[in-house]
Image (cartoon, rainbow, N blue to C red):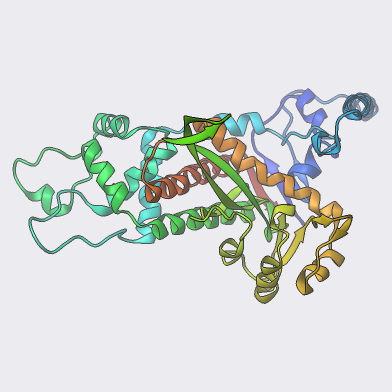
Length: 405
């Protein structure tokens, strides 16, 4: 029995009319999944509807042609990667619902994540019993970046909503009224929480979003990943030589991210201490066998191809050239033969989580120690996956997948 996606909320006629232009909307957003909409206004005759669709499609084609002519004088790397300006159907409604979450819902989701992962660290058996639960502290750290709050602001907001982070033993004692840890206690928890624990939280959110995505849109293209490197600015100042002068500049951290393209979620973050961002082997460990990973020419090195081959992963990387010829290497030569330029265009989708995250927090890391910088990076992309989770839930509230005979 074929399955279709049905929108339960009626839309105006002019909105539904635009969705009939499948090249711009439906096929881009839902793959091969049929879409059914409820229209809130009377629908004209079929002949009039066809006339309106023809007029809309003709106008779009003219705009695309004019747009391509305007960009034809630009270098190839600066030209638009798609001839069609696409927009997902009902994206405006879904975005409004996804952005309307309050702090309590952030805490509920963070506590659900921590409940699956377990206790982040074991408390010491010496001294007095801890006042605050490690699970609640970890949930507060996740909420801090998801809501883009400072430690001081997080303490104030949690106290205003009556959040209680104490352990069960502390709640039973008389006179214990401080249910929310102070900013210094939250900072201590940030130094205490393991980096691997945050990586597991990142992967868990990716799995949660993927499960909701499959229930609604199917499992098409779920094994397509992409790796990209980017750079964030830190608040730490360091000396640098500029024009034969020593000046103070904000230090930067360069890192790699692994993104699942279909769901726009980040699977893993890797900030190598040596700043060698060409090595993607740690990220390829998080990719299941049989997957396809897109990379740019920065990662065109032999050990990446060899590691992917050993794991049963296909790499699609634009090869680097030396004097007009590709570099040599056993695994690299085989990948160059299998290179598909049309599929490689999907690598551009890896820029979405980077841009979305920078638009929310400015792309600045307000941490000083190297280990805190790495944890802060992972928390930033945990926050990104949380926003994607709320958006995917909003898609589920808008659409339902049903079977027809």
